[in-house]
Length: 162
Ligand code: GDP
Ligand code: MG
Image (cartoon, rainbow, N blue to C red; front, side, top):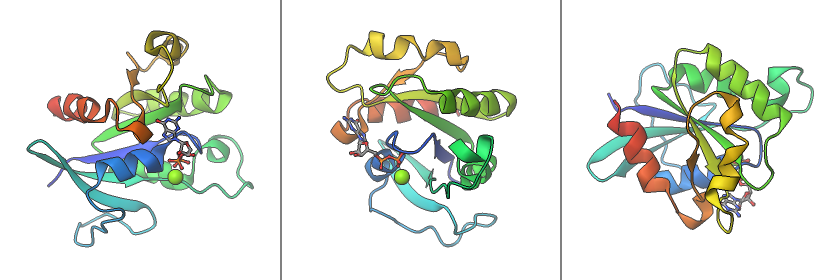
């Protein structure tokens, strides 16, 4: 069974951009995996010799309250399905109350979570990452998904621990 990586975070942080970077095709649908449902977007990818599955999540209706208002219900299901959770935040927008709610949820889960600061292109990475240390999810990992910067290193690092 391939390792499963879930991409979570509030809307507009760059999850789908990273998903497209991590998958060979734009939306390779993985049909034959037991226990995986179709309402999230699955893709298959490879970095070096390592194959993995990625789950993209999104879609908030606006009627939700609490954690559901910042994170799609699908994201919570994707976390359950994943071996590794990449929690994306936006290095340009800075720390957001929604990020804190998601971090609270992830800290209470038993999953292998990694905090990823996206959109660090043109920013000083140390400055961009500084405020996210306080989320209590360890050392933030900087990337710029739209520039494909830091992406390979990120995947090698998170898969290397499995
Ligand atoms: P999602 O809602 O989390 O799936 O976010 P998207 O992948 O749709 O991206 C939201 C916006 O952020 C889009 O306009 C992307 O082009 C932009 N974006 C994504 N990654 C980066 C990045 O590394 N740097 C910059 N500057 N913009 C990015
Ligand atoms: Mg998206």
